[in-house]
Length: 415
Ligand SMILES: Cc1ncc(COP(=O)(O)O)c(C=O)c1O
Image 1 (cartoon, rainbow, N blue to C red):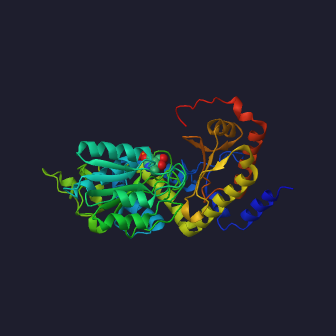
Image 2: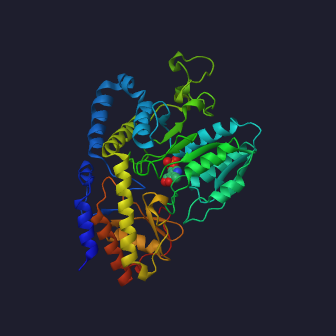
Image 3: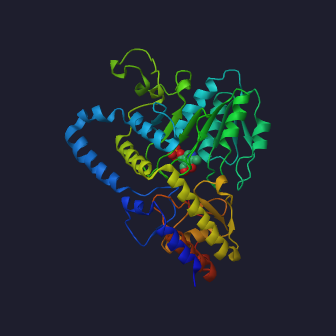
């Protein structure tokens, strides 16, 4: 008998969020989707809202629509901040993409600490973070101090401690590591940075909507909204600037949406005195309403329940992988302590790329990351325990039959 099947059924029956799956479009009920940490599913409310926006607001209201659209970055920012980041209104904007927001805030922070020459990050930070910070440092004649992070364990406090001194302007890490799911010790890092007078900037892309964060001691944060927030492909990202820093930091991109009395079209740039100074140009209205609907669904589900289910789902992934997959050389590359991981689990195997292709062909969508990492992100709001069971059961069959070896070993360019 398959006692793990019985466990999955029990867990689904007892799941307080079980009904939330119905709020999403499930185009192919046979498809097992374990990639919610890359691109979340489409909420049904978003479908309806988008057609209303396109047909009525754009189609009929035309330019008059801007009365309702113009404050969307702040309105959706407040909703996201309150439901998913636990912060008061007036500190979050939904705008641009994560890369651009990271650049804006990192440069603003570096400029706010004149005379300090160092930005600290780590070698396992997400590529866009490393590239942006490296180029920013080069352009500003600063040093990027890159600490070494063991991929599976995540950012090490000793290394942060050794890197942080009075020459440091900014400390910037990701909270949930994209390649392992390991959580960085945010509060202690905020404390260490502040003890030398540096600012902190967090990338919460893999946390927001799945893992609660405490930003009370942090200065700045950014994140995307197309993963757990279900904002859709290319949805605008968000940024957080703590209220007391808003007039002290400057937006390096002095776009007209960050201007006080924007439509006066005045001769000189005079930035807004609130979080709005971190806007740039015209906001992407279609994407913003998608983020608004995505946030609404998660707000109703409740972040505490999402986190509890995220832990239960990842525990179950690990339990099933231990039982079925370890004999085939699959290794859990994510912290086993649920307090130390986000909402995805990484399985390492020398043929992970072939396994990812074989799984996709078998109707299970995983994610692949270098090196040799199969990444499973069972988004708490719509993933069932039975999906984990069935997905890993198909993976076991693939491994048992070695059917993945007929797929190309060389990785595709989009993976
Ligand atoms: C940690 C992290 N930062 C940033 C990004 C992407 O940034 P952008 O939306 O600018 O492409 C991702 C995307 O996966 C990410 O995982």
